[in-house]
Length: 428
Ligand SMILES: [Zn+2]
Image 1 (tube, rainbow, N blue to C red):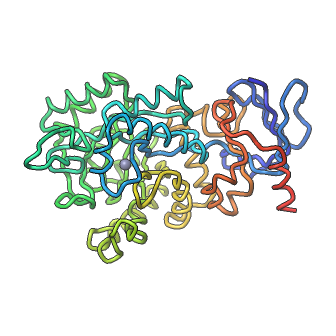
Image 2: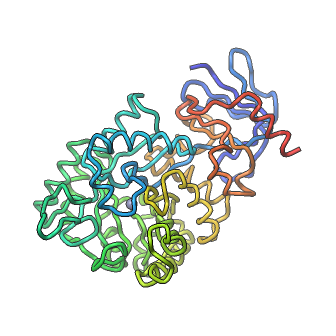
Image 3: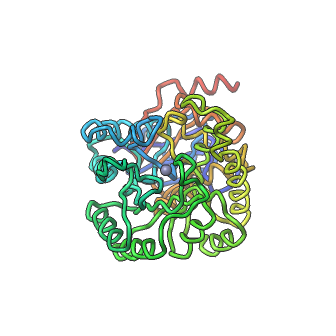
């Protein structure tokens, strides 16, 4: 791997400081030097990339990813795809995330038991291109809740989107099975979801006994536990049991916020607000108009989620973008829309939003201190962006604006000769 010098770039390093003109030297898979100004770093024996003023920022982290979701309208349709096609599909989706600048993804549940682990291993061995990836279990759920899709007359577990358990021993067995397959994260569905009739987002489903045994088994193997927790009760339950990643967390009351804050140095929250926003305002694509979406509770949930996230950010809790892309209403690849939502709905500045998907992302990937910033010694996951994401966060939705994508010191997308120069002309 030749050493690479990015020169004449505007460095947005995700430390929080304003961008500055400088140079970045990559040696092997790490950032060796960061220089301020031009021609400060040696060029002998290195490949020089002249960014012509383009922005160099860390690669992004998607905090709630489902490579196995198939851009379908229903959970059922995802589940019915046979294993062989499903594996090929997930491999193509993994590449797509990297194409869009997501150099890290945190798996949030897989529709087939081993799918996430197989994809992660194939990426790590170089068999397929993809982001750094933490593999998840299937959603573990209980009878009647989100993910139990068995029909009364067809009670076959394979038909179910999640793994259905009832009672502590069922749970222990399920968790141990996923640990055997090699997951990084166990996923529990603690609350319901407005998509499920009779199990809406405000309802609670799993017993304390079931959650406790899942956490105990995962921690014995040093693994993290994440949860689908929209309701007030489920957020509190997740904190009582020491879960690490809280997805959604829409209905957080004061007590829940206090509990989250007490664990803020350990936990991560990812609201996955696109599901709510898209179904509320753009649900026609799957036959859900605005009035139906309101009846399903999405207006109420959006208001609650926005208030909850704002309160969490004030308390210093790490709230990250990404989540539940891969449905017909929000297909894979559109994930950077979340950055725009964070600015528009949560009132974060573009700088704060970028820090959340880079520096906090590195921490969520369990590589805090070596991933997610442009800093000497850090892993070289870098994006060369045609434009300024701080003045227009939505440019990160456009893959054509990503002139170069580097993961672990290697180019996934090489800068085209002249691409950076074109940028220089367009801003002149
Ligand atoms: Zn999800």
